[in-house]
Image 1 (cartoon, one colour):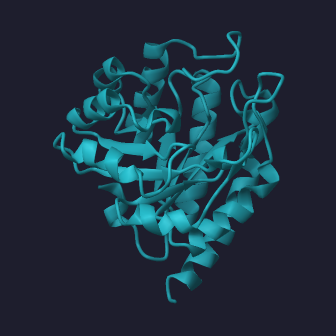
Image 2 (cartoon, helix red, strand yellow):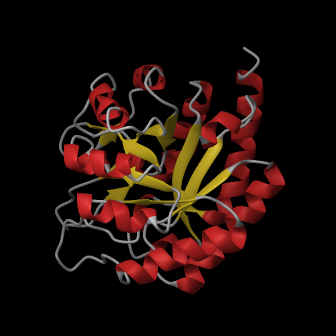
Length: 266
């Protein structure tokens, strides 16, 4: 389990673009992430969705083709020797994606889908389950049990905010300690600043709050930080409005490491 090897004064970083957009931009982001995390000695998992199945509008970008995107993820895994993660949306996708990635991610909207959880578990890959926006931290026990009862104990959980009103999310940090009782826990600091279901059909966000959410997560002993980043968020094909510009990443991570060092001694 990747989180077992993380020193107390460090944390896991799961980062990358929202969607795989092509070789050049994806490898550019991966190279920058590796440079920054190597400098700071932070363990990295590279993320990217090979397909975006949950889109508000029919004309939204969904991907460059499943196999093409999965092969890019596998190439990053092989060439840079780092683990990679992608999300799956149906039980038939689990076996295919497992051939190319190290960690299978269950999207928040699908956290209760039994067939999806069971099929992911049976691949033997680590399964990262995102907490549903409509679920309490305590209720994630049942999602965890579905994976464990299918023969797989390699599980991570990710907090990504709870629906607050119609078009906003809020992170309840009381839930972190509850999730940690169940499995290693990651805080998604970019999807948590989303403002979903806008009238335009395009999700907006408040990326200026990313650092404050991340700092609170570190102080509350999350095992890792999940964030989406891009060299040019305004041109990203998916979720650009809530991404972190990669030029701001090193400063953010440096600040989080300072906090982790102090909090790990308390």
